[in-house]
Image (cartoon, rainbow, N blue to C red; front, side, top):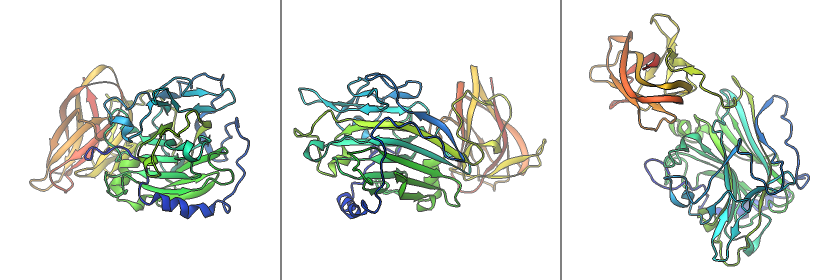
Length: 466
């Protein structure tokens, strides 16, 4: 579902998936572990060096709904304005009914597909309200859940597709930028098979650097009890502390699949990872993944088998700080925002500046580069102006646009200005521009667009005005 492809976010290894399953079945005995009690285990305390930044253990009365301070229900057959059937070809209608999504009274969330007398399927899908889960710079993020997938196998399981996964925050409100914004599938299962699949989706579709719509995936049998017969802990660990950033997938502590940044080009990796993610739990019925294993659901599929989720936990470790809880804006839109104080970037460098006030500036800015500044507070009185302190030693004929975008680097710019040679890379001037009215709190992206590949501008600081 990238902006250029229109293909749906299909998370599945449609390739030689059956061969992959057969090839991994022999690993089960070697990887066997005890899965622990069947239900209601407490959220484990963070290991030494880790900090808990989110958790839900789904305690509550039987039949009650999820904690809506943590979760929101996805209902219907698509996101508003997004691709039909959730972009995957699944056939159910998602609801917030307790018959589809509720607590079981024993410390678990249950998501239960149901079929009515006319053969219509319903099920449940929830996602975290937070969309800021990512590792701190130089640190690690761990996202895990203890889950028993629907305990149904064989013909009765045709079409079942339970999943625990994440989508890049820029997908929220856009719904057509998949797979470029990234998808991290921590656990997927289908057709009652004793196999867990884990996948990173990125790049463009079809094909592209991440082999879409299959993605960069791996799979393994569940150790010990089958995926259906017992609870297992499914985990992704996203590590920015290694020399090459990597995303590791495990079940019950057994790492079985790792994706590294150097498996794709730098731009593809940055587009998929230089932002937060939100977490999703759902049980789909039908769609592209079950189709690869015989299809369904059909008349022999049994409704009413629940995916049980004991807890979901997010931990952070190391780096320059831990993932903070959501807060109001911590940057004043109307002060000078230092360009080098970005939260994420692609293609830039920092250097000392001779501009008044000293310090550093952001340099080597060229077509396709971008920087992100989180939590810029504009308030209730609309900002209508933008200004930036820029310098350029670009060659004759080389120029470009400095653009302001909100909440996604692929959103429509709210304003921009053109800049060419100012007399040198440390010859500074303040350039103003009008922007569309902005209020509230936003992540601000500066993007740089040029018809040439050469560097065309340095930026020292920027700000907004009324």
